[in-house]
Image (cartoon, rainbow, N blue to C red; front, side):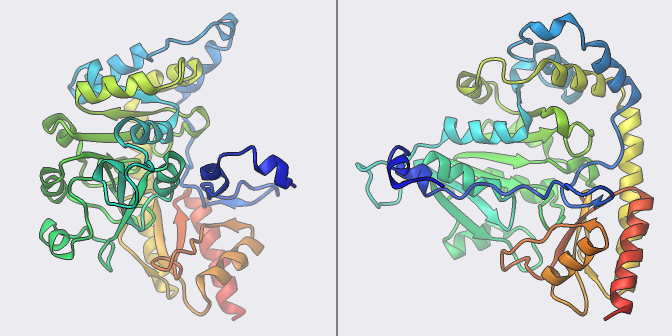
Length: 373
């Protein structure tokens, strides 16, 4: 336990922080893990072969500092230039660097007055890392509620409500939304991007499971960045590789802020090999989407209210018991799901789409719980 003396050695800002809380990592064998939105299917055999082949004398060497080959491959895929690509240690590092790069920290000179240069803005509920990043930087937070159905407010509604800051230094939009799974069209996102004057990051961590993506907006508007990851859809959570696509000047600014050799060599090799076997992953996307639709129907038949999803998870309001009770009852059946205490979603469980067998095990557990109610 920290003593008062050791606490005094820590900056007041850090002492007041509430850290990001990741999903539970199981310590008990046999648990079905449907709580952290990992892809249930392994990386491509070609990716595994490439990583294994790289476990040799190269491990003593530093990796390419800018992930140049990966940036070139991504630029070809997205029909842009390598200068439009920034690669990070997972998309989380990219998001953190964006706060450090584009947002001023609050200062005593600015006092309590509103200063848009210090504002990190986001809709709520969305990715719970955003407020943590703002707090860590000493920035101001502006959390604006989504609609009751988790839809995006229109620009007219945002102006009328006067909550949204169109001059905010940095605004995040999770698209598709997490934790609701709600998808947004490129057209509605573009209207918001056009109205925003600060940097706008469209966080597309789950976009490979959606009907539409917003990548063209990052290549059209100089203040818009699209964030992507190899974790969710491409089965590389373990390697931590994410990236931004955006204007070359913004990418160059981010590059000044990153750590040296920020993306490990095996991660770079795995990501490059992934881009060389996209057919394998597209087939997996279709399997996940198919399982998602079947599971949605089966849970609905059992009394759950399941929201439409364009991600690899669903948000479902369970019957008979509060969601938090269901969380424990499912865990007792060796099925891990996720529950959030935020009032907008506290009535729901977030359930990752696993394999067909894992989905069937979840349904069996649900039936057993209901039968004992």
